[in-house]
Length: 488
Ligand code: ADP
Image 1 (cartoon, rainbow, N blue to C red):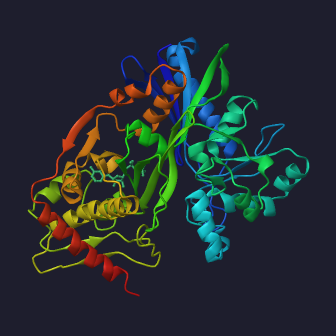
Image 2 (image 1 turned 90 degrees about the vertical axis):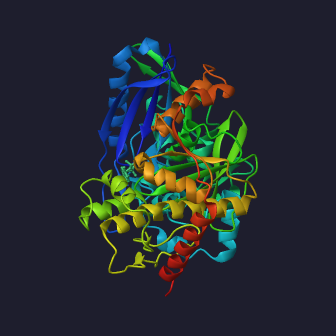
């Protein structure tokens, strides 16, 4: 019974990964792409049935590798904020799931008055935006006849993707979610750890259609496969699962995922910090009833600017090539790039800002521009890290990195230099799936909290160079370029 399966229900694909807790590594995986539906510009939906059937398929593929009787448990990590409406009696979805990217409720959210925004921020830790679940649930209750019919019949269930999968996998026996997923709905009070009466009433959401909220390490139920009952234990939203998978369990620990965008989570311990610079306060994880809070910040464009170099400018054959090209010049020759393709997020919050390339001379070449683009990713991360440290008064211990662009050693070294802390790159970069495995192992008592760090091995440590003043000066120059993108 030394195997655990992580189910990772992402936005573009779902995966099951089979982990051997004795060998401390993943030994098999199965993946299925999930379609997205775009009924109108700015609207994004998915078929919840498709998500479930594909999860069931990949789960079965992993189970058959070793046999159901050898699997100790299943952990779940999932795309956050997306909303599923379903029938409590049949388990059938009432309509397509409304996905986190969907902007259909942005007019409603933008019109939320300042005093209500302050109340929302205080209670949920989030800033009032269409991204989170609350306004999406409200929209479904107001606009979808089947949702209204189920509500009248007292049969409506509404939840995030984890809650729907738990309900389906346990054949309707469990209607629950975990603290981290609940903390992304904008209906959950992250201090009292309960659905919040005032938020529910503002968004017109009755409490009885929502799942029970349990700790990340709670036993959630059992799934019956091949005559065996396998416990489902360990649930978290994907970014929070990654925080656990990176063993960022000390106050001041941070992780950055360098993917298409850049996501930073900063462990603030038992303190729930309200950020003055627009970072989100969120639940990092809970081991039993002990909750650890985190600050979260994201940058919309990170790896995507490397894709831009590759696909639009034709400067690269592959994203990986950016490393050698950037390293072929000693510096950018005074060139700065601001990756504001779709506006600037935290801490600037200017949706109207656009990208900028500046400081170009007659001597500027491809390598300088490629290097400036990579450096801009590191500077954006420093924007987040500085805000988080200022808001919390907690010093950053170091960064643990993952995501596609963390493979770029030039970028990781530059990040260490610009942040002035160590960047620790793990051997196993599937932090989200590993987090789901570890939460499951904790829940089942297979491992103790003190063992968490032993499941993560450092592949390479990037230490900041001695020359802090030099890199600090470069960062200040970058901030001047950012100011230019903010000019109206
Ligand atoms: P996501 O999960 O957001 O789709 P991934 O974690 O798979 O993203 O990372 C893919 C992104 O990382 C792409 O935008 C790609 O351009 C970038 N990327 C991948 N490898 C490298 C590299 N070696 N150097 C720089 N960027 C990279």
